[in-house]
Image (cartoon, rainbow, N blue to C red; front, side, top):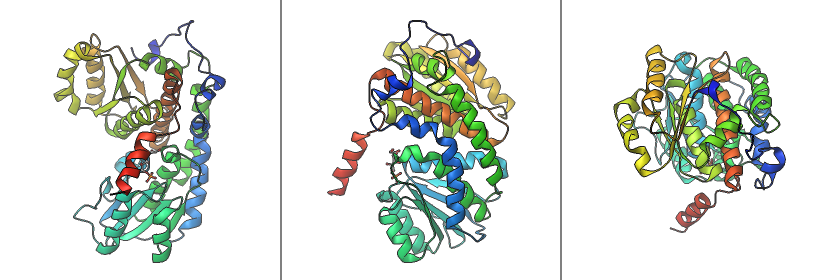
Amino acid sequence: MSEGAVSADPGAESLSRAAIARVDSSDQLSDVLTLPEHLRDALWRVESAIMQHWDTTAGLVVAGMGGSAIAGALARAALGDHATRPIFVTRAYGLPTWTTPDTTVLCASYSGNTEETLACYESAGALGARRTVVTTGGRLAEMARADGIPVIPLPGGFQPRAAVAYMIVAALEVAALSGAGPRLTSEIDVAASHTEQLVAEWGPDAAEDSLAKQLARSLHGTTPVIAGAGLTTPIAYRWKTQINENAKQPAFFNELPELDHNELAGWEGAQDVGRFAAVFLDDSDAHPRVKARMALTERAIAGSAASSFRLETRGQTSIERVISLVLLGDLVSIYLAALRGVDPGPVNAIDELKEQLAKR
Ligand code: F6R
């Protein structure tokens, strides 16, 4: 089913604010709905932390994990062809071997205590790279302050993944300040207003047959497989991880055109092993052959998928388009949590693993 074909089920369970609040003990919903304010506040925070420009000709490395790392990939997608230096995202204990004193390394960790990111901070120092930090505090802020490294301060009290808009703006602004891309400050401000309209259209106060609510109902009871291409590839990964962390269920992602060369064959046996739903994230500016592939791939798997959707980014600028589908995926993941009766906030499995590792 493509976006236009979504239809309301009159007997469907309500996804009102009150229904969501019954499971959402830490009000993750409000953190998604205030995404436009996060964009604006983030601009101000970067400006107050870093005043001067520099130019690192070897490019920008964003080092982080999970909800902090994804922002680097989303920022790179938003810059697209306008990036003037390589932009690389590392989710590991170390930096790429080509990191030099002529590379900017942005260490992004909401908590400031993620061991992989702390290791990258240290390697960046050892390699003499130009460091910048974005965090709420933790060990990362302590080390950066002791070393005289600029810290972009984030507000506390969020789940790291809910601070994604702050992190995207920080990565975009550091890309601009370090010579890796153009300044998108006014585009970000305009994108905030555009996102406000989408919040009204897809948020909990919208009708029960809004796109976001219908999508969540169709994905409920399935294993969602999200596909992106180009600009939407990191958004597809964001959908997968938000469904994992908010709705506490498996979800997977892939990208076109690659999936047409392998995953497509696997769909043949999908119904033998479970109920899988496909979501294709399209973009108005996608390569025409990729668009053709998305349409043909959706058709090819139609008989095997529990449901399938093709959704397109909304907006003019690339930042508006990126944020539009990030917002939709975040809302869908919260609605899915409500339909499953699980609390979207806590991620006990992740916290417990971090605790076990800390004891070793
Ligand atoms: C939790 C979340 C995680 C964290 C990750 C890294 O909401 O999204 O993916 O982002 O464990 O932690 P931070 O962001 O604190 O460095």
